[in-house]
Image 1: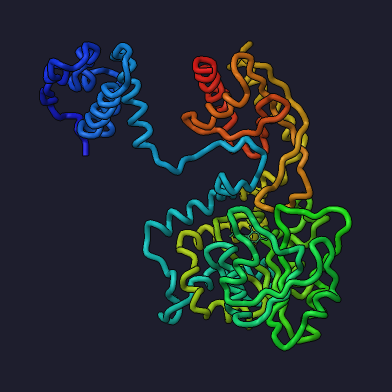
Image 2: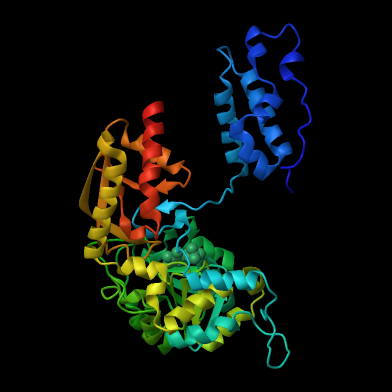
Length: 484
Ligand SMILES: *Cc1c(COP(=O)(O)O)cnc(C)c1O
């Protein structure tokens, strides 16, 4: 729909149809057709068409009429307001942002950016028909999860695997399929709430299973679990504490102790890992073997649940790996249909898992960010500092200082990742004002504040971000200084 060739119809001159009683200031209000003829709206007329731009002009003129006393703004300023209004009403609400926080898996910023291969797979799947639920060999109905199950079995050593919409769904499904109407034994130290109000006791209640809490907040022993076992026990559940830690005087049995206990009594053990690593060698995971899916399964866990978009670095998904009997029970439970994953997620997940299988870990942005060395980060920080100093000149002081990034998403919270950050101290406005303006820029930038400076961590910058940042900072500084 292009309106470029349309001859402009004359618009009624708004200023001439005002009733005479209207206050004098409004006589200076320009007519809509004058606004539409102004050069600054020409590109918008081209891209959006006359109707939409005219509506924006009318809206802004109405706003000015309603504003209290004071002179009517100049034509330029009114046009700028129209452009602003058009930007706000036509820009998508879900926008790309620059993550300068150093939090690799930032739930507020959408967690893992996808690998290029995953993006291509999504695009291809989204624009074509697919064999989502058709077994091409025999022409029969297939199960969508089977498309990635072989990859997951090969990578984790699991007997079977199932994919659902997110990890919260995976936990709910295990509890409903394995423990409905019966007891689930869980340590009081693991009755946690994970960001966004996923609370273990509430999910358990929704699943129809009964909570049997054991031990204390800081110390729970295998013997506490043993004392709770009985004819009603359906499952032992271990939950990774995620972004919460009790430090000091603490005890919790290792997964192997729990599985030895459970299996001696014929009771399965599930482990909600939250952030499951598929490869060894991620920073911090040597000291935290409870993050590795394969080791948890080797330690005897019957079902392990984890997110697709945490340490795995793929799309939002919930993955269940483990013994075939329990995974099958989950796959055939009626809730599975409500929690199922869509074709684009499966495409992205398959492509990401394929990168794991071919050992191409550098192609997965999350892993690349986690594995960046301090030396490389220091060099990036210095380069970024120079670009910023060059663009902003004397309006701010810049330096490179040592800092910590974090994996985020409840992953490896106890192991900060050393980094180097660019500290920007504005001279002409406060640092909070600058941060707020940056968030509202043409490409929103999210950064941390510390020591009265804006801290930009190169670890989470994506290629090209370092080129955009100086300009975005300059614009934010100008606006922050103008408006205080
Ligand atoms: C993050 C997390 C969840 C929720 O996973 P989503 O994929 O966000 O639904 C559940 N349990 C643990 C331990 C977690 O860390």
